[in-house]
Image: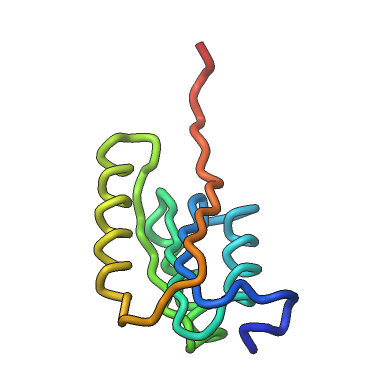
Length: 117
């Protein structure tokens, strides 16, 4: 698959997609991957360790020119939020090879399943 085959491109970007294990978040990760330029970074965050890893493999096979990484974390807990923030910053720092990024994107689809008070 080509990075520009599905609509207007997003250029070279770093994109973090939360809730990427299923449903809307998984679909958004697939759609954004098709629009990222080679060398872009796509981070997939979900509370389940297996599903984002499966999506990571699928997208790496389809878009070998992208850098894709799954970050399993429960964003409903402070520890999960902190881990994603640190891991994302560390990955972005390691990924940055001197080439300028055109965009930093956050597709926040994480939700909490608890009663409202």
